[in-house]
Length: 332
Image 1 (cartoon, rainbow, N blue to C red):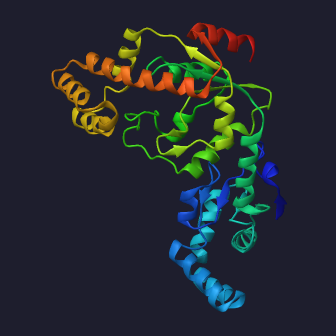
Image 2 (tube, helix red, strand yellow):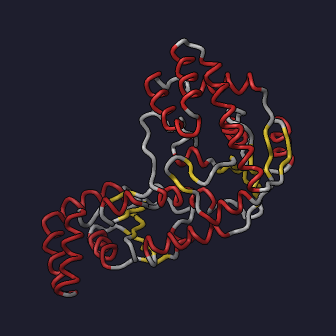
């Protein structure tokens, strides 16, 4: 068994599977992207051991833990073998890099599996994430009104091997009231932060990174404060696009939303739009005049975006899609 700091543990050349032995609830709250959860304890079992430790001390808690794990050692062994594969190699972590990961590594060693343990555990990984968000970066923030093709441009840039941070993809949300991806699972804010950090960790610090201009929240996920401040203080490349193009793109992207769902989501804007506009937009949808409904909504979203830009006092440069793509090609 070897110990490694976070950078060594996450080395891109190390293809060994990452095993997180924390409880399912801890793992769901946040984990290293790509890690597999083989919990030493269930959520209830972890709570029992923790209570025992507080009330009776270290030794009784260890004894209780051993009695819980003992009957399922063979099941844990099967999971370890399956993930270790022919290479017989794993990377293992728990919360602080303590007893839980050491216990699982002890079992793995009996099976002939080589293990690397994360020094400081998941807690050390979270400190590493926070550090990455404070680094000065060469941000290329793409702004523009709703429907101007910002996400589409990010996809093109990624295809052309530019560095891209797609916050909406990571959050599984397009960022507006109507932006939840259908039947999708939205991560916790903690996991959202982990995924952002994982995207940033291998990008050279001086390399241009293209990112879409977002509000502080993307769906239910919150952009880390230090990162958000860096983005809104960066130059904004405002993407030009005609109103007709914007309406057509929105109808294509959101066309799968049912009428009932649309009206339900529209009601979330009731206080901001007012009864008259909500009634008008609903009537347009009922009559099949979707272009008029979208155009009316865009008046609201455009005004909000203009207000946000003025409030943040952004440095704005108006560009078109081809201009940005050509700039990315010249400055990879």
